[in-house]
Image 1 (cartoon, rainbow, N blue to C red):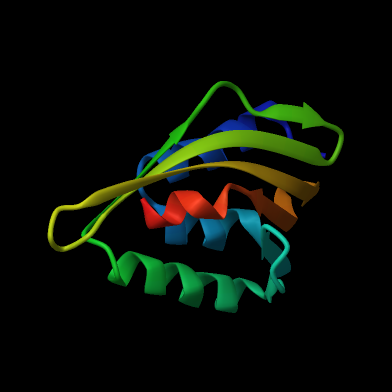
Image 2: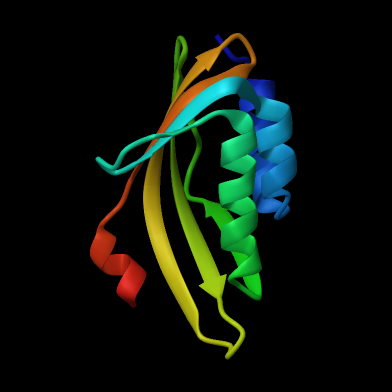
Length: 121
């Protein structure tokens, strides 16, 4: 079960824009992430590669947590707003719920729930 301090440290890394560092520090080597109901991305190295691809395709990404993270044992739920700005200066926003399963102080599984129609905005 993660402590509140660990969950807050994770959120601060994201809000600071250190997405790769957050994966390196807080995900297990065999972590899996799921986007809505898509097939999972499994393994910290694959998660980092995927995140690098997202970051390379954008000029800027900002993350803002909306409200506190909710912690119940090994489950953590957080509401996020992400803003993606492309090379032309167009910004798209995405609100999502991140539903995480932690093992001690690391994330073993994370599921992202969002409205796919937001991506096209």
